[in-house]
Image (cartoon, rainbow, N blue to C red; front, side):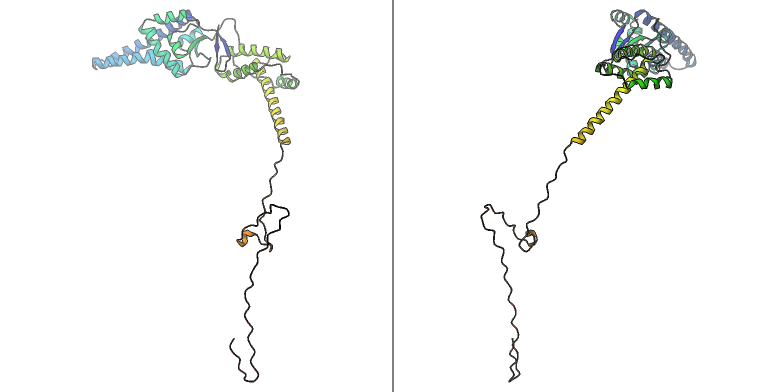
Length: 329
């Protein structure tokens, strides 16, 4: 067994493949690849008998690279780490964190494997795989991958990660969730449960069943509620985790409501009013400077501004009765 650790610090107890099984899988793959290369090379030599020798050699070199490097990389990428030999022996290539391999991982394994397995007759691969605790060859070390066993004798599991659950079973369990005491469950266990449920689609069914069984037993021991009969351990973990998230959401809502109710209401200061003149007109309207505030309570108030009355025109002089002539004004 190898304790592979994911990026979220979750330990995956997967059984890695050792040198004998890996060597047999590689031999099967090479037999198929060389057989296909021989058949196509024979066909190309007959079909292209009239072409130049250099062109024929370039064509043969291209076919060799295609069948021994490109084709294995394509098959391993499309099948997520299962070549013909590995599928026959129940092996699969995965990343060191337990996830499926991508094109870059398969490309590195294919290029390094061509030199260490074919060009140097497999001596570096045999020595490295025999000395490594996980049975890795140089291609696995450079690509960050490992070969694991998918079919382990004595380890059974359901055909799919999460089989369908009867609604009545979930309904009966839902009534017990309200009375569960989840305070005894440590945070690292919740983290492991969340990471396992988030990676169900990337793990093998047997691995999912084995890991979820261990986590479900630990969780059931802490909360005092055993896993119901007929319920998948991963489904049990999902139901309990959903109940915890519901309680956390209610607690956050209640805390937010209390904060909103206890928050003081801000009081806005009134806007300053303009100082009015004795006539009732603000200083800023008349264009006059504002009256300064008295600093001494006993000081006299400033005198009001004085206004000069304009002169009135003189009344016209009435005409004299003797002559009837009125002097000009």
